[in-house]
Length: 358
Ligand SMILES: CSC[C@@H](O)[C@@H](O)C(=O)COP(=O)(O)O
Image 1 (cartoon, rainbow, N blue to C red):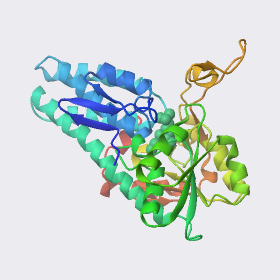
Image 2: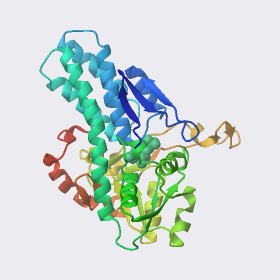
Image 3: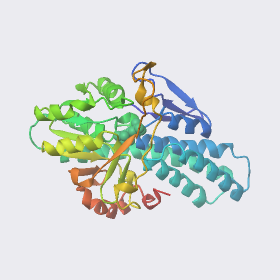
């Protein structure tokens, strides 16, 4: 299994996702500032992964605070939290994980040294919990997939795999579970312009595990559906509003529209920590805009003439009515029933959900 974020020998190891699939390079992170930079530059990316990375970033920042005074410690830790919060705006898992860490710091009764130790344990738990959560999502997702045909072809967008989570993956976790159960014939992966997470990362994960994968460019999805090549679409999410509207990688919305036009089920797979119940609908989700070089430059080659303008939103919002079901660790729910999933929260691992958009 692939683990994108690991704690080892007093530092955090990140698989550098900007270098895959050409090179497998592991980056060592010792300071919260470097973790913030790694999240911004997408060395680590994918909603749950950046939550895990931010949690460890909080610990790295905490261990540098030199004081025995609890109040002073908490004040300085707030600054670390603010730095990490400023990295990427859309994935709510980032804010959720930072809230979990701040809550731990405030609620731990003990010395500063003891609080620091508890923070490290909390970060590790967020990481391992996410792995287990993804396995549950995989199992529920497998049960939610269409019954026929027996051998399914699933289309996915971006990378919602092990690299994007504490391991296993959300959307790719569903495909992984289907593969293990003998129900997946092949995964189709949208290349996912502009950063190509599908072509580079999803395809790489599939090759690692022997899952048959076909990469298509984003504008081929409708054609493939019309040809009857796709049985279901499964994507991840960066933030889901209470009504089920879902922000995910740019291009997800158009994929949902063409899936609906072809009567193909469209699933969102995500942990409940991705649901922001404080937002009533998707119009309130902040959408990250990234540097235009992601559009005008491929490798080191400029692909557009001088004098043109660019617009580079990294995410879009798929309205709930285009989504067949949202697959969570508590089960698969029609988007309008997300509050039912929340109702099961007391049994879940996420008692801090209400803080997720702090
Ligand atoms: C399980 S990851 C779900 C989403 O975070 C994923 O689909 C996605 O959009 C990732 O965007 P990225 O910009 O690569 O961080």
